[in-house]
Length: 145
Image (cartoon, rainbow, N blue to C red; front, side, top):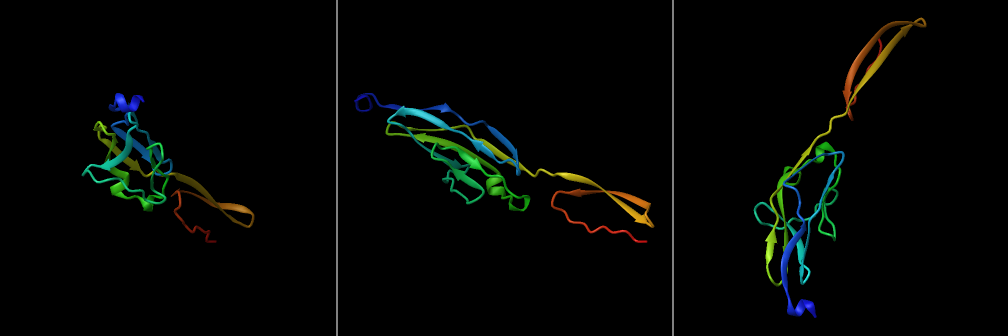
């Protein structure tokens, strides 16, 4: 067979970008693919060379070797996941190659709302207040007569 006679070292067919920025509310998918004979095994490593491990609800590795950063709540931000450097590797019996560094930067998306509170006394508007709230922020507002 071709794989027995003509082994070919790994070569990236899709190399990940050098920088990936996304918001916590969107998540991101980083794709990496390679060809070779035999077909290369794909993996992800951290900047220090340790293998990337999946983290439930935050970071997954798909069977196609895509690195998936799931949407997350701002309070679930982890610097070791969301502000880190990764590298894709492809290896077979001929050799191993590594992608460029992929700098991941997740930012908090702040959604702000403007609210209007109208106060009435005797069916007549006595005052109005405009205030700003961040998504998820709670504020108890009430009118004093």
